[in-house]
Image (tube, rainbow, N blue to C red; front, side, top):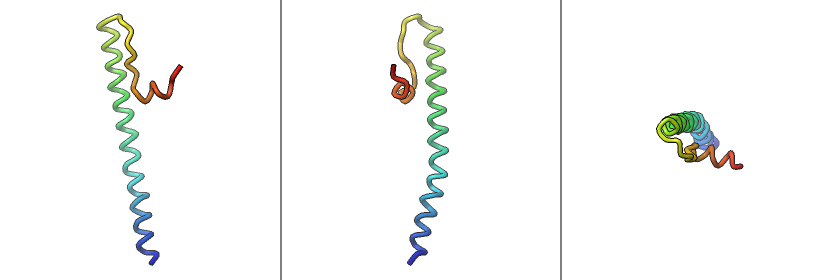
Length: 62
């Protein structure tokens, strides 16, 4: 009876440890792409456009 629940709990924990690092890496990589795009945009034209990463702009509203 408990054996089935333990397997499910174990799979959920293992899944979380596999998925969370992937999400963190994906976020950091996308942020790096946005920063690179920002650098290229600033070098190309002087107009002011907010090219911050969407999650970063949500977290740092002024």
